Length: 267
Image (cartoon, rainbow, N blue to C red):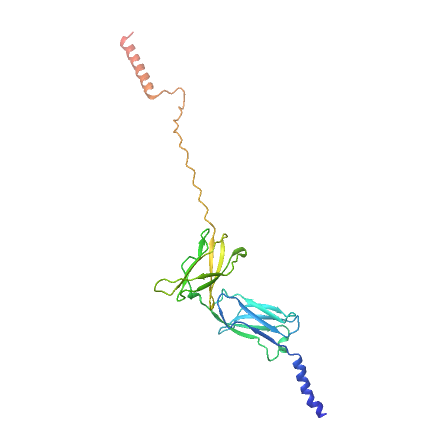
């Protein structure tokens, strides 16, 4: 009887261990703002098990949820979830797993379900000298400098409307006499208006992503037609019996003279 009581706790531990599952997630601890946050992981949970990967902005009050991705375990037992960071402010973020049903109770002690990610902003490390608003057919001109970069190589990734994408563009920087700013210039020929996104990378990774707004070619303005010159038209007389003023005066004078002559002759 004592032997049975001794073995019972061991059997319970074995049963509990048989139902303990492992989930391990991983993500960069430091990430440049604008680069996608990729969370990867693997698990021993059975195929078909579902849980969520949630991204929070950590703050003094209640954490702000940024987004969530539903994960379903498949035969590979590995998974990944991606979050865009283009519109996120620099700071500390938390990645956390949330389980459906009561799967959290089945986690083994070797699981990692929470991570802290620091989002770093390097946008102040690059300065543009060409405007971010441009017009066809002159677009797309990418010019600027990186303070203290010197002579080196920048990698540009360019994407745009309607699936526009280019292979990585490698741009050599130059310097001016007595200065160590890395000056770059690159012309990318585009034909469609819309928003183009250019990501700048150095050896440390992503520096920043710049949005260029490209407008269509301005349409030529139509010239107004010149009005035709017309000759002035004299007004027509209002009646056929009217006489011009000089003739009418002459006729009246003659009539007065006739009457005067008759009166002078007498009867």
